[in-house]
Length: 240
Image 1 (cartoon, rainbow, N blue to C red):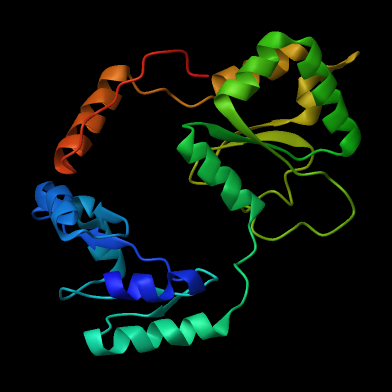
Image 2: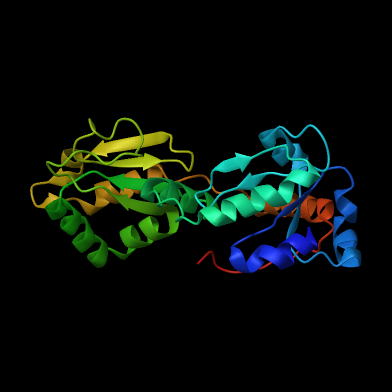
């Protein structure tokens, strides 16, 4: 594997090694002793083995530049041929999907996604309110990943969750898995003078995600560090 990396890395080959759950505590020492020159990760709770349906070891899986699995369950003799075949194809990476990017960002930052399905004038109204109301701005910044979907006469883009086409003008809250948590019609957040800050802020505060206790984070991180034979760095400070 080290030879393959050295031979093809300049052509675009990226290697990732996955160590089985059993014996994962010895992985770091083995990687160091063998001088392995590519990333190796521990398969916690057999998640990777299960996802790829691995039935024997070692096993090889080759993914192309678009992220599609092209070769699976390869024998040693077939590996280099599969690599050279895909490297010869060239091509471009798959286009980014803004919705799935928003969900991934929310999961990484432990937030929810706030979807606005309003026209540009309403977007400007919300933006103006945020500039005036510090509490509202901080709630949105600390608790949500914002995803603006401008209303127009054009067809709804693909890749969004079901229900947006019929949602009308609204604020909608989704969790990081894309499941709708709550929605508020835009008209319900308005008053005689326009958008009401108190109503908008109350909706955002009520539907923000729950924050795990520090003890829960510490216990989970400590367990992972032990399983991966690593040390644990604890940072104490403000969330921002």
